[in-house]
Length: 338
Image (cartoon, rainbow, N blue to C red; front, side, top):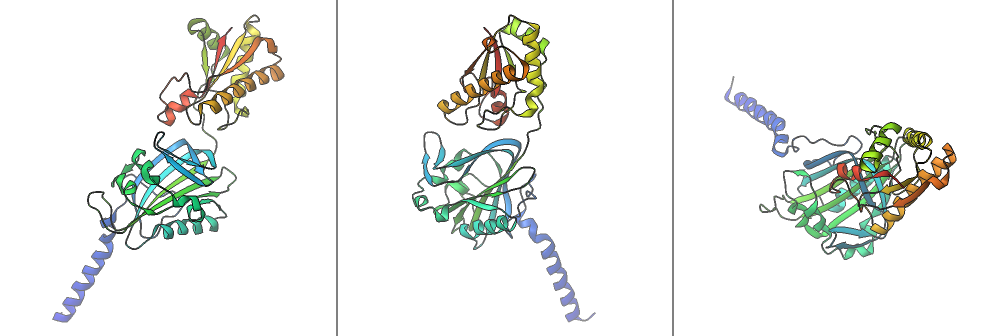
């Protein structure tokens, strides 16, 4: 083999090795994966990841108002509360990508799938005053190889946010994309030169119920020993008081209890988690209790005089409202004897 040929072979081998190993220099965070419903921005890397099989989410749909330092939450002129599987992804796009470019790419992807734009900060004049808009990232919990400072200390002037909806028969998909820019790398804040996108994907759909229906006999025993019984089988959509059809087994058992104990009168007490204002949750929890009473009287023939309805919102929690697991335990209906 001539010297020139040996040099060409060596060069080809080196180039092949470079192509094969170059993705390792920007590997996705361990345990993460793209949501198959939404593609990533070309060349970006996953640096933050979280997935919850079921959680609540508030999608911005109207004009941005402010960041509240007391509640550490943003406020909007209008929002849409949704629930379902929630995927949170933080993408790092090193180089010359801008927040506007990232958001526009996701918008094009959504519209190509038949989706619509619910909110776009680029068309919201009120978004110009976005003091501390990124502060909320200081409170977000996510597995990341970067830092919350990667967002909170980014160039706020270039920040963009947009929300989208993609309809589908088994449950609509909501996507919220926030993007920020780093004109220069920062070792202290673990940021590279380029842009970062926080992409939240909410797949709405029915919650798989894992709660066991309490039978009439167990209800009677609980009331006799503890003075109340908590029921998790009476189901409602978020912020609504219409009883869902899958609640029938629990209603059947309440009716059996009342028919077996002809002198028993019950206070039906609605409980919520702490999402939303106290006043609205008190009203909601009472409407839900009233809906239970209405179902028992109209569908099972229970006299209305044996039932009364109350709502206490989140004033009597049985678990922490700090995560969805605790909030699910707090959303319940209790039966208390008169």
